Length: 322
Image (cartoon, rainbow, N blue to C red):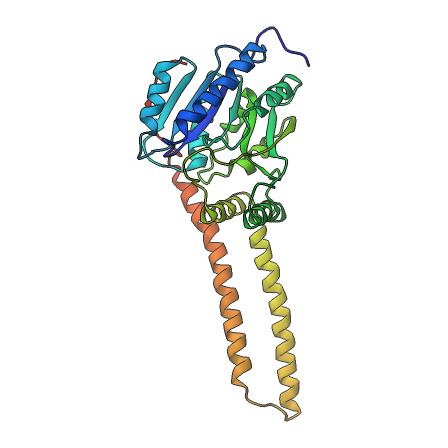
């Protein structure tokens, strides 16, 4: 490992939404890990922990301001309203790129092992611009959670989304990656699929994920499904191609059916059958509605992208200087 004389400034970016129960606990964990990195001369003492309040309706922002007043290494920004995890994370990364050399994004709930940050920073010193935090196993998850989560990543890959298996949003990004990433102007964000598109040398660090320390999860199954749908339709046109292939296949079957019906008619063996007719109508109607729904999802995303609305608005900062 080759550590330069000028130590990099690290910014740990942490999106928060209604985290008043867990923030007093995990904030100390993040500060302790940062102190260890500084002591081992892996990062500069100018490094910071940046909390991003995603329009919380509890005491989260009050706690962030209190933390910033208690220690110079804490800082925070507050969004004008709830914009969702991905937008809040993007806001933090874009804020961090102004003053940091490297950023590490991590959730506030304490499930991701903060000790993996050391290996990420070491990988950066070894020349990596992107370091993904990847779960080494899902043994702690229930069968349903494990199956649905693994299916989530497999579906993304099959649909053409370049996502790292078992990686969420725990990752290190260098300053030049953040600079290039700032040119991505999508409104529909799926960061774990967008980061690989930037390129540059990357690596992975494996860690065990823990149970949530306190509070409740903000990502139930419904949100996971919505995230998968957003990721697929934002980064891949494969569903449209599947519709085209399906339409071609059904057209071939329909042509065969017409020929068969004509032959039966000529042979004088035609029999009126309402069941087969109803089945065909229902099947075709279902396929058409599904196809229109998928196409509509893409049209809706185009509609939102053309508006060029801001992806987030920062309403307050704990300080004007970092």
